[in-house]
Structure formats: C-alpha cells, structure tokens
Image (cartoon, one colour):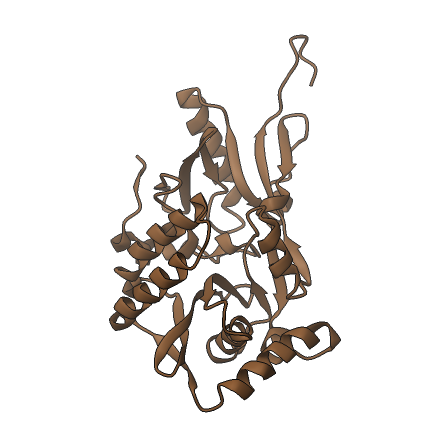
Length: 304
C-alpha cells in the first residue's frame, strides 16, 4: 500500500498540498522530499482525496497529519487510526499544525495532544524582511550597508537552475568543510540536497544565489504556499566570513521571488541554541506550533 517517494511522483503529490490553511513548512512538499531518506518516508493516496505519509524515527513509525482539504481531514485521520489498529502498532501522528487540531476537535478522553516546542516554525512579516525597516532591524541594516559598501559593483543576485548544480554543489562542499562540527541533521540535509539537485525540475521550489566577483558565495531554496500567501525558506547558506551576506541573500530572495508574500516561514530551530538565537534575531511575529497526537493511556481500572 505504502511506497517510497520518488521524484517522478512529486508533480502528482504536490496537488494535495495547500488545500487548507497551514502555516507550517509542511504545507509544501519540498521538506518531505528533502528528508525522505532520514525518516524512511513512504506515502499512500487514500480514496483519491488525501495523501498519507508514514515515517520512522528512533521511537518507531509515525504518520504526519493527512494532507488534504479541510472537509476530508476527519475521514482521513480516521483512516490512519484504522491502519494502526490493523497492524497493532501504537498510534502516533507528528508535526500536527494548530489549524488541523481545530478541525479535528479531538476529545481529550481519547487522545493525548503534546506540543513539541523545538519543532515550531518561525514566522515573519514578509514586508519587513524585504525592507528591513524599523529599529528592530537596525543591526541587520548595518550589516547589509557594510556589505554594500565593501562589495559595491562586485556582487550579483541570480536565479539558479539545473545547469547551476555543479557550482552549487561546489559551494555546499566548501560550506560544509568550513563547519567545525557537522551534526547528524546537517549530514541528512546534505544528502537530501544532493537528491534535490538532480531532480529539481519536478519542483515548484525556487533557488537563488549571491555571486561575488563571479563566485557563488550564498545559496537559498524556497517554496510558496499560495493558500496562505507565505514563502517558506527551506535552505539558506552563506559564507559566514563575509559580513552582511546572510542579510543580503535573505532580503533579495524575498524581493525577487516572493514579492506578494505576507508571511515568511523560516522553519524550526531543531532545538539548537545558536540556531534559535539566529532565528529570533530576525524578529518573528508568530510561531507555527506543532504537536504530537497519540491515544490517551488508560489505567487498569479504565480511568485515564
């Protein structure tokens, strides 16, 4: 029933995304493809109306909330329960957005709903990231101005395409070598990026980079959630030794690729303090919180 996600499936499966409000990065298909090997992802289309994703982590198998429209969600959720009951596996649904919880209205006597703070996505005012206006962005603007002064006439913003993959991979190799410690999730991300670079034509995602003196020094990938007018920044990497470069790639990406976006989702911080500090420095306006759903545990006497 379930099968591994392949690049040729992306065009068909993308149509299930964006059918209801969802402000998490999981509202677009890119991350499912990027992390599929890390989470051993498999999918199934139920009744032609919902996309069901099954994954695995250190605690075993789990599902994501069904990807479908609002009206179908309760039925698709019930189908997930039926599947778990059929194989006798513990019921676990992860990365559930707040909007899905409001639709499902799960009774607390049957379900345990737990917020996972480290998985919350950071949301930003898109126009502020494009303009960097206001006192809160004073430091960012100073870094940007320092870059523009030092590299005047030497830098260029470019949309990247499949024929750019060799120089992108060369840049990513340099970026990785510059890291003192490569954590497990970074290795998994690099593997996912390698797969993406050889299958990028099947995605609606956008890639762009900053060139300095003709050399790629910053690289980013993003998608657009049309339903919520929200851009999602999946990947953003730059030469950390060049002051203001991260600010520039972030700003230019929103200006050129997502001029109509109202929100920007820059994903979660994976529980890493340094990453959390960096995301907070961009002044989020909200968090897209995520939850785990399991069946409530009953005591031997039948009480919760």
